[in-house]
Amino acid sequence: MKRSFLTILLLTFIVSFTDAQIWKLKRYEVVVGLGPSFFFGDIGGYSQTKNILGIRDITLQQTRFDFNANFKYRITQTVNIRLSLATGFLHASDARGSNENRGYEASTFIFESSLIGEYYFIKNKAEDSYLFTKGKKTGFIGVLKSLDFYAFTGIGGLGYSIKPNSKLENFGINPGGFTGVIPVGLGTTLVYSPNFNFGVELAGRYSFSDNLDGYTSQYSRSNDVYYFFNFTITYKLKTRANGGHSFRR
Image (cartoon, rainbow, N blue to C red; front, side, top):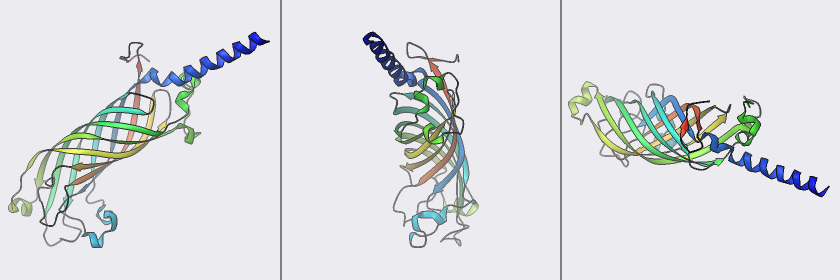
């Protein structure tokens, strides 16, 4: 009887230890994201007294799109580091806002690279299951047990090129350049299967420049800011025993 009890206790410990280490089997992730971009510069928009929290500045006319690709490495079960590359467009226009008579408009092409750290303050329970790693999908059932929630920040560089309308061009602008950015945001991920995750991410970028739209107002109190709201797909790569990634399933 005593031997049976010890055997059960040992097996329970082994299973618990194995489940706790399952996340290490896939420490590398490739993530792609696509979604709208929102720009807050010195062209367009309403004055702060007429625009609580900047909500009135979010319009379809000012919205453009971005695409990003990311490579992640899981340092621990709750901490990731990722290299992110993003490209897309930002748009600013005086057609709607407090300076409609001024008539400035600019379209900005951007290419951004950044190094980002992620912290998962809520981790899913699905990937701790050995059965899940063998192909038992959670699907969209039991969503609460399959969701991750994380926050992130980092440092990056932004190259940009501005295409102004005739009025802004006559004013005289610097047509492009390079500046630093600080990404900050929140995200959530649904662990759909051992190989794929689906998620959404809201990411703000504070730039070190006030020239992303080619114009700096004398009333400007801060540098330019832009946001990405991305829908993401994650593919998880198998990790070899030596810690390297493997493309074999």
